[in-house]
Amino acid sequence: MKEDKITNPFNHRKIGSEEPFVRPEEAKLILEHNAKVARKKNGNDLTLHYLHPVTGKLLPPMCWSGNPQHAAIMLLLKNPSWDLKSLNLITQPEHFRRFEKVAHCIFEPEDYHNPYLHPDYRRHDRWHANLFRDLHQEISWGLGWDEEKTWLFLSQQVCIMELVPWRSRYWSDSAVVSNIHLDFVGPWVRKAMADPDRIVLMGRGEKQWKMMVDAAIGQQPKVKNPQRMSLNRGNLQHKVYQQILDMLIHKSLFV
Image 1 (cartoon, rainbow, N blue to C red):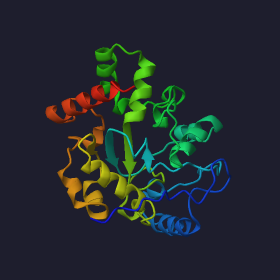
Image 2 (image 1 turned 135 degrees about the horizontal axis):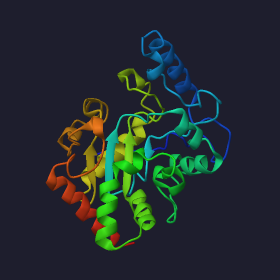
Image 3 (image 1 turned 135 degrees about the vertical axis):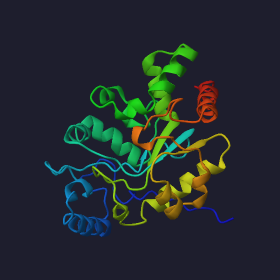
């Protein structure tokens, strides 16, 4: 079997630089996409953003929130959503640096590999924390860990993978304007599916993931209600939730 070649799509820029994350050729495709959806009634909601729509500041791409190489749990979604509150938060220097490191796949042992789970971010935006709230509670109680140790652990063990790294309020299939990111995301997803010590969960966009990345994704465990996204006993099969919990507790032995 031919080995996947995995190249970070953002390695054209240096960390800390003012250079955009988006490549010029992709920026052109995004502008064409935005011009096309602008003619629709909900065009503003379908517009893709790689810059803050008000301030023009750089937005870090979020093709992966977490470590795609080592995270035990990988959740497949479509693309990050946004509101002005979250964008204003992400573009603050201290938050931006955390998200930038993740985009460049720089994961230090003491870092929150999923920056959405950092306490300074959770304090203002709970959407990602709510995804893993039940797992956090069960691990914290079961292991006797304090709240923050558990969040740090989870941030290093979960990774959200997106088909598109650029933000829009709502999804449209035309949002996949290029394969630049899929050439990176696809191999990591396939590696995770082939690893018995990792679990890949189908959250949103099964049709697109199967068509654009790998048809075998359809065989992965699924979130029951993608519109109420949460990894808990009610939204996953009991067997799957228990497998996730058991795997995370096993991983905790090496912390």
